[in-house]
Image (cartoon, rainbow, N blue to C red; front, side, top):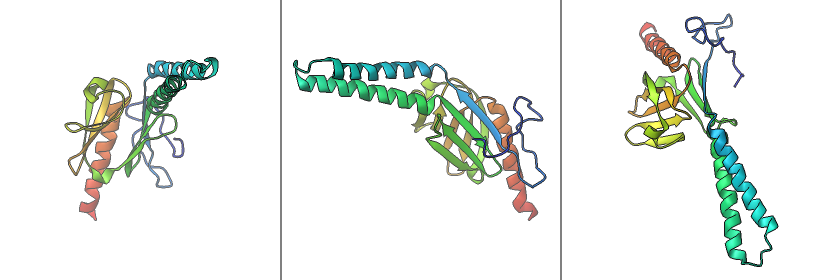
Length: 195
């Protein structure tokens, strides 16, 4: 995430906004959102896996191999799914440079979505995004709302794309992200007219 220079965080006017460098490279706006409650799910997933391993190792397998195998596989699978859900969606990182909006989920950055700003027609601040609106946490799609990355309840932003789709992301300081996107869209709209 630190492969490009970042502006200092915390100052609304001077920080994280687009500013030119001497070498012509523009700064990158970054934002994050974290849901620490999901670590409880990781604990539950680890407990499920431990139970599955305990069943496999400690049981004498004389009471029936098929029911015991189903229990072991079920516990381990449930534990792995819960752990993956936590690792993949415990936080989201948003990065906006002069050409793209990039959304990375979790510690390994997958799933990752890159949206060229040339495809964006608008951006709006949303003060109250909830997992309930989207059917839970994570990478979501709803026919009436489009695609969303929801890792916690709270502020976020929606970008509208030229093909009619929309993309919602929960992120801290979403108002600043909307300002940066709108500024970049205004700059992009001004370039063809002056060329």
